[in-house]
Length: 496
Image: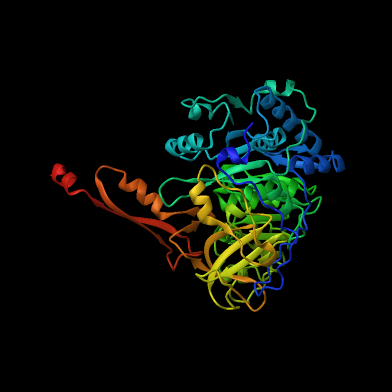
């Protein structure tokens, strides 16, 4: 059995999580208000016991109750356990968004293993890199996607195998709070992506704390994001740990704002988690004249994240009446580190909010000194959401996860985000940009240097520059990448 140390990761230090740093100008608090010592399977089991017959998950018109979802996950977990998979292992998931994929996520967590999400849209070279780096002991996929993994020496388990229904359906022992729950790969400046390891404790402390929005039993939330994007973790478990229904949106529908609008109204969705650009496209789809009047969305809450939220989008929601929240958080600090107060049309700059319970946010200058309100600095994050670090990247982990020098928090780690922010007079952070060249497109962190490294790896390319471009006249502004390549002189001569 492997633990965090076997991945070249430091053990979590939570000694000072009860410390309070509210005396600092940054108004950061390390008080822990989420459940201590909890795991995702443990909390899910409690919810199943509370509402076994309530609808838990809907996909393509079929709904599973909490009891049915739990039973299906237990059956797959036992199949994994039969392969010797347990605490400290990693299981790859090559799956499109579906009911089976959610069951697979739950099943892996029930075994105590961590899941490694692999988007089927990724090129083979990227998939190989992730598998070689994370070293999963098995992979869950479908019969149709199985050939994508045929070149890897991995036991492959098809989640659509009908014999899974013959497996036992009683629960396994729960994992420990400090066990790694998932490894998500993000873009890297050297051309090599890096895997971020997040524990059960990191997840549950966020999902059980009183944040700006907590789903309620009976509500319906959407699941629209890739499993390689950590917002999917919030989508799935904020619904399933609070008695809500999770509507899994097929890949074909998320790419069509018109179809997505139709599904949201048909399924009476209450809560959506969207990038600002995606939600803006959804609003435009509702405004397009149809042969029949389009029913209005009946949303209780919209949570923005993944990219900067333009004030114009908030202004467009002036008459809709739902709760609007802007959330922020790097993958390294577990989904959301801050959430805004309810956004108000006409307020101007859209803040990324104040710390969620259990988080500490510091705006520091180059000397790691806190800066006053209104002054720009780099954002550092401490607290219960800070993950283990990067898998097998000890040097990089040490450079990004640094010692926190502040008062009672001394000895804990804080994550250097690379984001430039400032505190507003209202106690909320305002995002100003990046300290490096990283950009976000549709919620995904992208290092232009990684793309440049791939381009210059071609034998006929001498140099390459990749820049982000946002057309000013496009509604809403959609950031795209542009590349300029300079050829090798020798290759020009050969072509002549």
